[in-house]
Image (cartoon, rainbow, N blue to C red):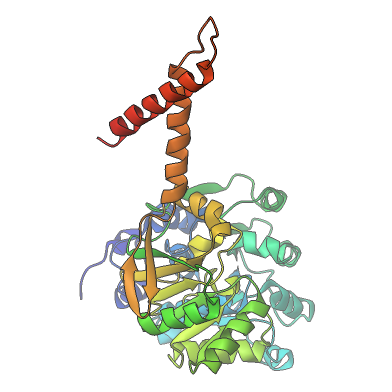
Length: 436
């Protein structure tokens, strides 16, 4: 089996075997910078975008440090959504399944929407590693079914989203019941001011690592803009999906209501879309994620719940039916495609009112292709902002020409007309120079 550069971290043989099976050869930047410190027991704040490898940056050293002979909770991982918690749990199992039978590492996932009583009954034996949503973990601690006072490591994943969703209080409650010398590992795409008091409470002098992605989005994503041009938006979306015939496409909307409307409209047109948003019951969400992973859908309509951290394999296309108001979410949305070395296409249907947002995205380094789909045929269009660029250039030429033509000291009849003629001559000259 091919060697891996992870061997220099001196992980146990079963972890190296798991890493090789996962196909990891070279650590990502955040893994390189954080794994040694986490192994030493340091607290860290890792700020990075989605897709930088942060999950394994904390999972590998946490699993390395677990002592299987101690039948007690040794680490707790919190995530803001059930889907993300479940996903992290599956990644844990991919590693722990290699642990020796005589020293097997146990992990459990606790999320809302599951039978709490059954969970409590199964907790007669405490797992080594706990992952879940803060509310459910807290419930189990209050019921005295889960004992975290033995755990020395706490992970707070997607901390800014935890804050937005009001879960920081629950995380605080969990942390306060853990060991005094707590190793806290916090990961977040952004570090809002409101998060800082919480960090200060538990982290005296954490190692802070900010990993800037080489590009704001993955290199292999093609960003395409499609103008709406007074057409029926739902029909245009349907035409795009048929024309692209994706392996798997996620259509993003800004609200749950719009997600349902889009999914219903696509169903009426004969497509079979899955739907993923916060109004689904826990059972519906679990079933939907299973159906998505089993490739029962070619199309998924989702709100931004699906954009943060949830890893759906094989997404070939992301379509922004609506642009998000928070530009970070554009990055998170398109980050669902072009993963693990594959290529991907991110399509945005835009209207004139979206121009400011598109300009900001371009300033972030995103380069758009401007295309249209007319009667099933693709056509390349001039730059989407060409008209505004031309208007800006004209404005600059006008200013320069006026500056060059001075008002005469002695004003004679008809001087304004002569001045205007001179300005027009200058403008023509400047335009010629610009276009050379």
